[in-house]
Length: 255
Ligand code: 1GP
Image (tube, rainbow, N blue to C red; front, side):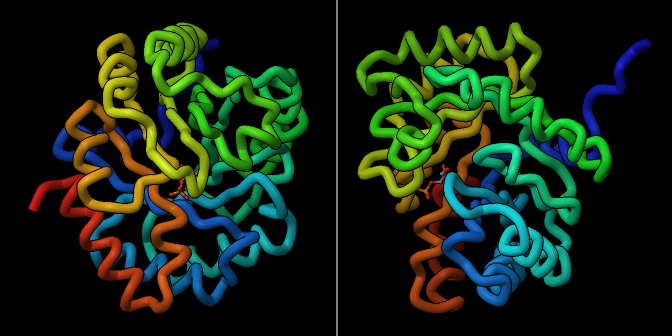
């Protein structure tokens, strides 16, 4: 049997990438209420964000997860992509799921175990799985610790490139370089550049990106998709979140 590969959300990503670099907003149901998530999603759509990712390493499951996903679906038309910390991070209300493997974990649970436990739920809910190689770069923050990662040293870009290429050869159609949510410094541009040089699939970069300048540097180095979470979640008001998003978008898509 020939597998149908890219689904609707993946096609959407590829079509958009032909024209511009993308910006995804990550919301963690452990940190935001459905009400706040709905406001951020509405603003995100208005200012030109390309998709909303939902997930987290701790507490992003069950009712809290469903509530946030539903609230976002009701307030915006943006694709909602799950970004699960484990098999608990599956919600039937989302459009797609990054079916990700933490390739540099020391624990097989995060490489294939959680995936096996979650696979039937993904099928039952008709979620679109998008296979993704997930790599933790120093410092790694909470996800690095929980995911039992051996974080790739910031000054060793070739290690990241080797893992990224291995991920592509294993059939993963996206690569994500993750410094960890709230990281003091984002993934170094030199590392992004070397990884981008060796892979053919789109490159996602996140963790610690707070300013337009940091976003611009990542894009200039070769990132195709920038993910920001903390910078938006920490905004004092929706108006402040809007301003932050507008500024980050300038860094990613140009003035
Ligand atoms: C974390 O890469 C994402 O998984 C986003 O990180 O919260 O630091 O923006 P921030």
